[in-house]
Length: 185
Image (cartoon, rainbow, N blue to C red):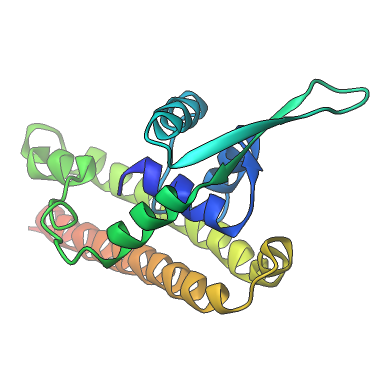
């Protein structure tokens, strides 16, 4: 998913500063999309050149002025075009560094591979905890964005994430059992 489309999606909810967009990328959607702060601002500048967003400066007392971005009609057209695009070719390309490590793990001892998988299970459990917290926060996200229908779709993505990490744990435990069988042989 291009970052620019995630940004357009957030700006379609409400006007935001680059900081606000970055904050939303860190919390509710971080489990399936992340970006560096510098990337957010780079994309915002490119999107301004494409006339998908515009900006204004909000004067603040006691703090630096804030640049606030809003989606344009052209930006909404692009967002809707992208959302409706049924070409899944890029989506179906899958890269997973953990699988590369497991694939070549015959070069290290079984214990090291098991420790790596155990660490992965712990990381997955941490992600599940964070996602459960985000799921509980959906009503506050709805309130902040002054929306209700979108939470239905947010719930779908959160459920995907939870099921994904639960399945990753199941797979990693299966691998550990297979490795233990090799040790016992």
